[in-house]
Length: 130
Ligand code: 5GP
Image 1: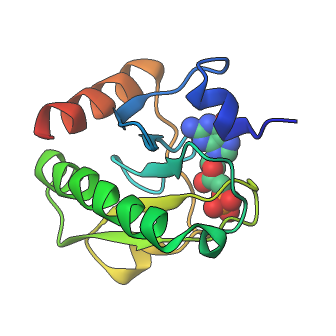
Image 2: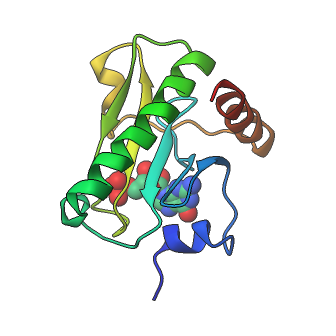
């Protein structure tokens, strides 16, 4: 069965899309640690990120870099942090989270509750900064 992220990429499940190319897809995390928290995923359905080929892993990070720079422009922060966990959804993904401090990257922190309108505005702001 296709992963939830493959179904999002296929348009079967809605998301707040930020960016896409032929190999990668970026969209807002539905349980954000901060405004701008974005997931970058390969279209190829691979569970463990380090099972990607060297070329795909490198290209995924270059794609994530462009998205991270746009997040930083749209949501000024000290840095955009990157994390790879992947224990919940078995489809490799990079979390990009705007940070003011290291604590902002703690996944045990309470998540933001954003309205549909707020999610749309966040995604639009990042897309405009790309
Ligand atoms: P991880 O696998 O990295 O531990 O966590 C998976 C992440 O994917 C979580 O931060 C969770 O909020 C996010 N997530 C899970 N299901 C969905 C979904 O259907 N849509 C979106 N946008 N994010 C999701």
